[in-house]
Amino acid sequence: MRINSIIVDDEKHGRENLAGLLGQYCTEVTVLGEADSVETAISLIQNKNPNLIFLDIEMPRGTGFQLLEHFKDFNFEVIFVTAYDSYAIKAIRFSAADYILKPINYNELQSAVAKAAKRIRLKEENERLKQLYWNMQQPANPRIGLPTSDRIQYIEVSKIIRCQGEGNYTHFYFEENKHLLVSKTLVEFEDLLQEYLFIRVHKTHLVNLKHVVAYVKTDGGELLLSNGDYVAVSRRRKMFVQEKLNS
View (cartoon, helix red, strand yellow):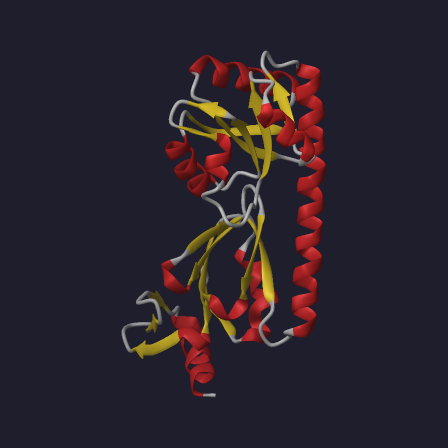
């Protein structure tokens, strides 16, 4: 199992040391980025969506606890890293959270990462079961699991506007101009989505008919979608698309 992480520590040598230990002793962990303050860490978490954060407690412009206050929902696990065996450690221990002391012992690091990985796997399994329950209750608008590089995201089918194939990947475009790159082919999604009014209008395009605003009569034809995108209709699919739009 791959674990995508970030390191938050105001000391550069501390970040470098931890990254080196992870590369040597915890090869399942990928470091997506590093931050040296609460402010830069918040931005990094929002941009990278890690599932594990190595978080220093004491920093000059704020503590690790203050960083966590910025998030209502925790979609990540945390391993606290600190040189201070203080009241903060007591609070962490009472909360059954994981921490490692500086200087870092690689055995303690491996143990903390293994426990975090177990919680991440459990969280993913719980999420799959929760989505399965939703889909059993909402058969007309299920949530589809879309595997990205570091996680599976669940999206309501009705919110998908179009899909565009690119080799072994598929670009998904949603309402509110959101976009997701998924590591599966367009053919796999065509089979899953066809019963929810998705049709193949081009070799590389799958469109949700519920989001079609207009059919533009050009050479092969184009579809104007609810997000303002235009998608070309191939000549050989022109009659099929028109029939679906008129049905």
